Image 1: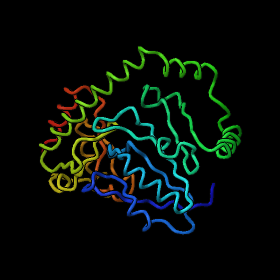
Image 2: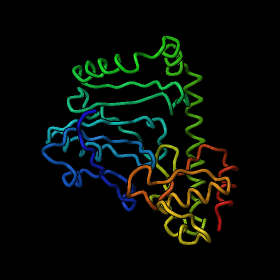
Image 3: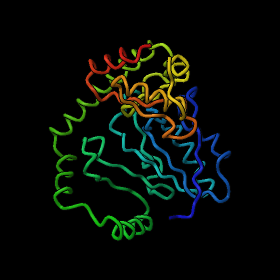
Image 4: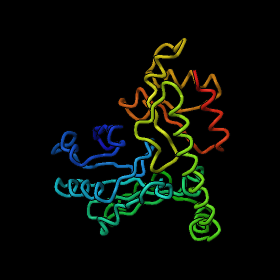
Length: 263
């Protein structure tokens, strides 16, 4: 639709899957216009520090780019704190900030979110929305306002975050004891997924499935055991030997999943 070519910027598990500003020049050119960033990240759980995000903003400004920062998982940070791009570029000169209630309030089916940007960007976005999805219903908007402002809802959300902090650390520690599964970045700093390397686990499979990446074959194997995960290749070629696991289930269910995964 935009007549643009997306370029994926790989991240390294050895650096916690964190996007480093020093690597961006390898993947940008004079034709580059937009850098899309997720922090807290899905699927890796990486959360950029203020200094790291600031360095990315410096690169964006120096090269005449726009940064689109997806911070949908901003309420789920367990190690450190979330830095929003609006804290660095308060006038949104080079920033488009997008967010949603899908994760923080558990209402993904409502498809309700927002963006913060320069007035010219907002005007064009409204023009596009008016001719595609129209507008969210008044009922959904009223319900969303209650979700955001209701003290009981806020308290409940924080309790869920605290439960997920424990679940993420416990699940990651147990996964690391499953032969062949590695979590090189450790427990996720944010979000509610673990991005695990299963290259060694794949080699241990007695009868691996035919075709597909190692992560896809492991996904199929685990599905047969009643453990449902997502193949890492869905997030790019560098995730071909990985899987994404959610830790939103009760801890006893997560522990049983690990038991079933053991070869």
